Image 1 (tube, rainbow, N blue to C red):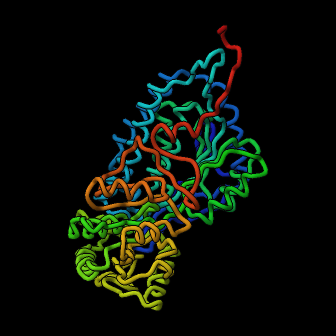
Image 2: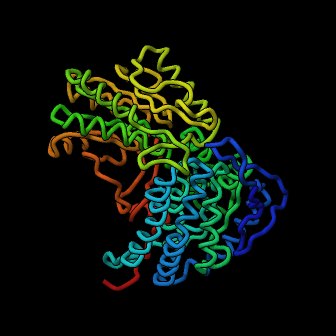
Image 3: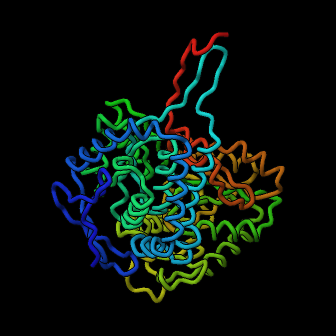
Length: 476
């Protein structure tokens, strides 16, 4: 059993003020393999004080100094990629192929992207006699989830460092080990004491305290909409900025002229990646009614071809377990609700896949003949569960796609010109056409209850800046 019982505060590894241990479970085995400490309000106070003290000096460092720090962190992540991938695989169940191909590279990519943006960003602009200045917002509090852990830490930490902010991170207590390795990398890179601080803990003990703290100028949260509301409520009395990347129920509209085999088969595979544990997963597939039977047959075959395997031994394309017991049970309950509400179960269902008698492994599941009013079409399942909804006209598909409280992402398959027209009408923050991959320079975030603010790229960087107008800075 590995022990990681200290926090990183003011450039040092320190013991918790009020020691309280928590086991970290491997979801593939249901066995604890590491122990961390859970922090308290006193630990948060100590970390925030360190960040506050470090802010004046760090906020005035040069662009090149901060860009060089980001370069060193990027190199450090690359050097320890295998170790980080193993940690992510053990703590949240990502297959090793996915951890190495996407989980770790995504996090590394945000540090590299932030360095490039910083080197080319104009912090000052003259408009007539007025100078507009962009300045770092101050001390930032970060709460990150377990599903893409390093990625979601990096897309907050990287732009914050680039902007000249200081910070306190509370990673998910379900997947904390990758964050601890990143902390070692940042220390070795020479990040000044107090600029980056880490306190492990749960929502009530650390997250709520950080959100409400009077000396925190900004909270950035990624997680469920329910938890995001709690963060915003805790932050409101101190009128701090709150950026949120929350849940999703993203539509995938297969247009009548799409290559059905490619669109449906690809949509199933994208839904199942990371065991469906992605907030932007294409979980509602809309298919033309006159092609519904063919589409369901394609989806059934694609889902049944998905392998479910132990993470350390998984073949490329295979999926691993759900990351924790609570989420696994939620998925099981919602699959049963789908059956009870009369959706056609095409593949998968409740229980573990054949040959796996322990671990939080869910069966790749596809429901056909779903209506947009069914529970499985409304609620975010956050597992390998796809719902297929037939539509009469493209107008109907667009209307149903937007008939959701979420608006994080959307997907459209079909001829580029028609797909682009439909994409413009989907009320969501990021749309992918015909399987286009991610772009770290493009903003990521949602409409409606999928959050506010943006991460990634220049837009994500600007979340960490305040705008100052200095009038009369020069003669006309």
